[in-house]
Length: 342
Ligand code: ADP
Ligand code: MG
Image (tube, rainbow, N blue to C red; front, side, top):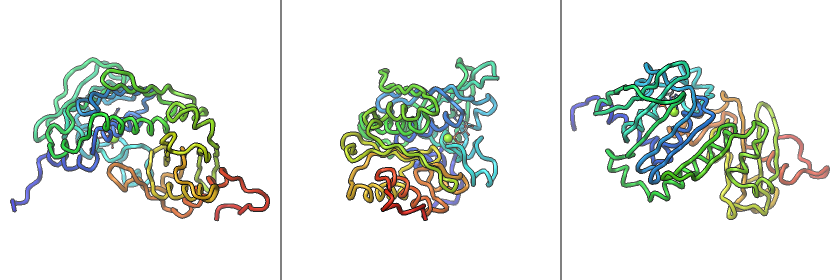
């Protein structure tokens, strides 16, 4: 064994990156979330070679001031929470202050930004084992561009796990779909190797179904049952594919908690159970389900990549989903009405 020593910053960040930056799509997810937290209404993504070569995101969000650029690239530096209290009521997508530090430790990252109130734009990048940040003048409109080149160039063990460009790009597309589904008022464009691949124009807040149509197709919306319901401080809005629209025709199982894309076991289980009670055995339901709960009732600090949440009243949430979804799929008649959620 070696004597105990503090790891140099880059190595410490690379270790942390192991949890957050699994593949190009995880970089895309973190960058998209940052732009949304910055209030962007227009986000452009340029991907080269499945993200192996380059991931570049440009947004029109609030930008980062010159004197905060260095901090933005540092680990445990965030503008989103300040106290433990804030952590118990997370309203933003990010809060760990780790993404940019992690990503920049395993790629060549530059961050260019101009807040509306600042006259010039500045660009930051970091180098070496101490991740020394250099800031230079740049040209950029209001907003930010984050350029991530040569992902995992310095971590061969990780690079080995990268899949074919096409596969990695499919993962990126899936991430952008999820983010687009939960932020209909933001426009997104996605290019791959210079070619435009997807474009989601912004839709009005009350036209959510139009965004769903853009992302998963008009056919799904045309055949879906729509339900919106509030109960004890929780709310569901859902589009539920009927028996004829199954996943085989269009891979479509999307669930969101407070506008955060989730593959939560509890939610999946509840939806599956509801389909079973409405239709009998149903292998592949299609659905887009948005659940809104009091942020104090849900812990999002469960997993570094925030794929999971923990509900304080998980039974109540589960039963609320089962009841709402099964009633929407097979509305209770006077004879079989079961009454309110227990
Ligand atoms: P977190 O999102 O958890 O705060 P990040 O490492 O992802 O941590 O980002 C660090 C900080 O950099 C953010 O808190 C935010 O202040 C700033 N930032 C990152 N991306 C953007 C962006 N696109 N626009 C404005 N500010 C940003
Ligand atoms: Mg972030």
